[in-house]
Image 1 (cartoon, rainbow, N blue to C red):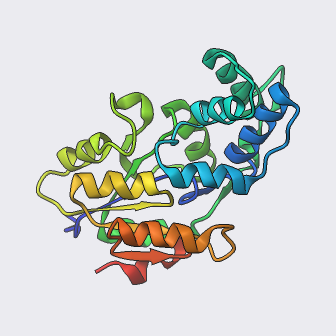
Image 2 (tube, rainbow, N blue to C red):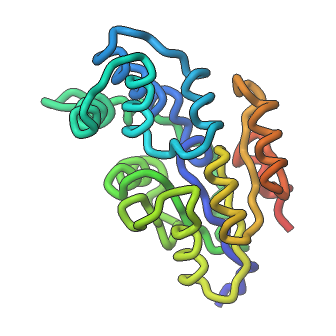
Length: 228
């Protein structure tokens, strides 16, 4: 029996998966569809850095409202999902996602730690990507937004992971201030991820430091050197 040293819990978007051309682009196209305005990814990051905008449907509606365009939430959700998941046989923007972990990384980590996921995605969205890039899946449990009553930055999802691996230390790896705040609320160490070419790298790093991140790395492939 393998004696593992604890649990590494991962956020998905921006940590396991590059989503600039999927989720972030879907926000841009959704806002353009209803308003005619083209926002930048940097503007999206400004909202993310405020915290409380882990739900990209709600964020799309908020941006539209700030542009003076009021759209019902369910209408935003429908348009977003058509773009993201595709329709009528046309592929959605989810197919543009790129897996970040280099070959062998997760296998090495799984030999030392249990691996888990706490993501703001719905489970069916997570499954689409995990089946493409991580099959067989090394993560257990996988906690998604439809598994919790309280979304990030509430620690409910991380507490579910703690309960599944009771008595073992847990680290959480994320790329937003909501991830960091969720970890702090759960009283577990947080490792922040922020790419060198991030448009607001210094600001995000400062937020992570304020939330007491134990380490900040460029991407998941630097994780091994940040772990005990």
